[in-house]
Image 1 (cartoon, rainbow, N blue to C red):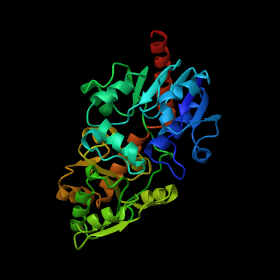
Image 2: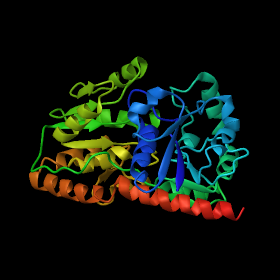
Image 3: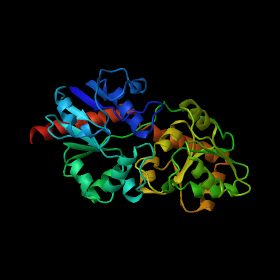
Image 4: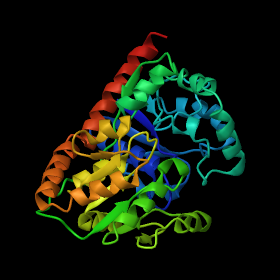
Length: 357
């Protein structure tokens, strides 16, 4: 099978969620298919597996409307895109598009790295569901990363096409640990309002012997906003970005990873933490119940006291070890080989659907 994968969303310096998802799937499914990558800049190649590639325009270019003209010449058996915004007019091939989540319908602030005109279109796009339906119905199969998002796609009737789950996975093999570590908590994620970092910071007032490490990049203005909310006793470190090795090191020494997000499409940091043998404290939301299962300690995301109690429960070495063991078991169910098998099933479905159109 000649499978063309749209890797034009790959970053230049280090992966974000979409970039890592596409690159990891490409590497895993290359064991089962003849994979060709689409890239728009050679600077993307160091973060991609060593596979044949074709250079074409950026996915943010106006030329995207006519991208099928280029792709048709590659004679793919199937094309997979890790986003839903791929141009498809005039295509002659089966197409799988991906919708990761519906977060931006409730939180319409677009990603800051997008150009200003694209950010304006992004906001307009999420004012209603009909543009999403228009894009998704141009595919043969729609992929998503969780049962929770698949349910929302059905609830909002976003597509008439088959929906298949192609899950996310941690990058490294599970690790284990014999007992509690340093009294540190880590948070990995953006600082957008729906991430609810304010509640986490407030909870640190009841945890003066713990240090919270905020790992992601943050704008100076947002940092000032959060620093203004710090309780006097709280110990909080703003890292403003960490490397993958630094992230792994911090995971390996932390008491727990904490995420109080009010909306997520998946929550990969939860699985990454569990795979590293680190307990997880997370919002009691449908997606975190799905991803974390019984292994995550779920709390009311609006209650700093509930967060503090959950952290204190891990002071008991026996309870800490039980949570770690449960997390390792939960994480073992997620792997890129399993995701590759799901993608292979999705592309085979796309071939059947396309042949009937």
